[in-house]
Length: 59
Image 1: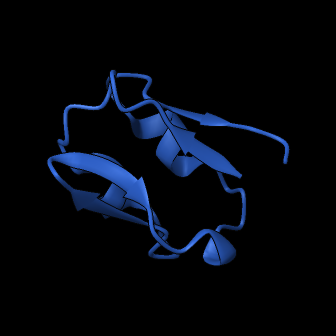
Image 2: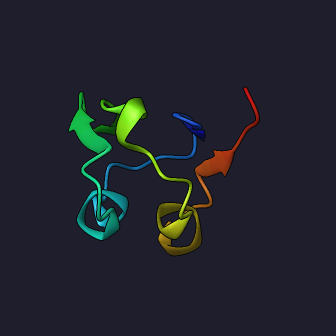
C-alpha cells in the first residue's frame, strides 16, 4: 500500500498521471489515495514523484 506525505507533496500531479490503475487524485492541492483497493503495488508513483512524497508501507 502507498502512503502520501502531505508535507512533502506539492500537488504537481505527476503521480496521478503515472498511475495505471487510477489510485490517486488531487484534493486540496495534495495527492490523495482515493482507490486503495485498485493499487497493485507497482510503485510507479513512488519512483516518479519529484518530491519523494510517496512511500510504500506494509499494512
